[in-house]
Image 1 (cartoon, one colour):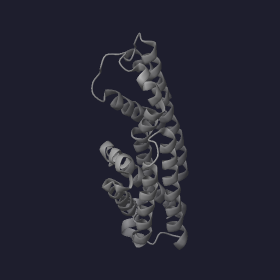
Image 2: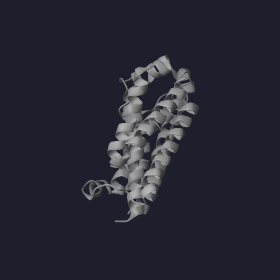
Image 3: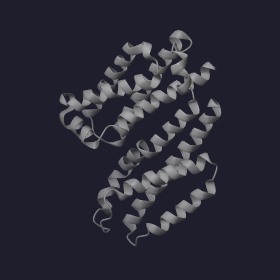
Image 4: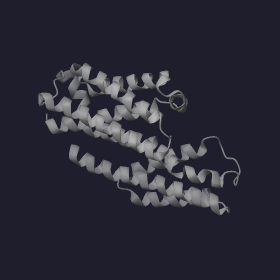
Length: 244
């Protein structure tokens, strides 16, 4: 079994654990509580412990419990620091970059101390499929983090178009964005770029409006959503080529 193959799998699982902790299992109310109460927020510590636990379980490196405890503590420190800053795109990106560096450090220590992962073969084999973990990371990224980044980027224009169109279904825009990025990523991975053009055409018809501000707001969000999904798809195909 190739060591590089296992290391790619390990890194993908650590990133997936972070994405699950930060975007899937962390609710908006938990984030709001952190920003309101900062270091006094109980959710700050629950979230950090969850991040460490998910990384520990998905990594399969059960001989490094102390290292994952340190990782959880660093996660709490990073999020605690962010909670005392503005909840905007700049600090969101810096927060994620800081988490990524801790993940890379964790990955380097686990794979570098032993030269190979000291995990029982029975545990290692089911976790060794790097391709599967890379795909899971890609889909989680386009569904959750990309949506948050797009929302924060277009936030300054939200008030400009507010009240200029009829109220739609609750959270419809959120789910439309998630589904379109899911489909686009799938099309890119299947090398079906022509299907993306059909999706663009279909959405432009259904989201037509005579209000210029609303149209521009929707167009910016749509193009950002499509671009993000295509880029994630291209990177994913490249990573799959390395892993397979």
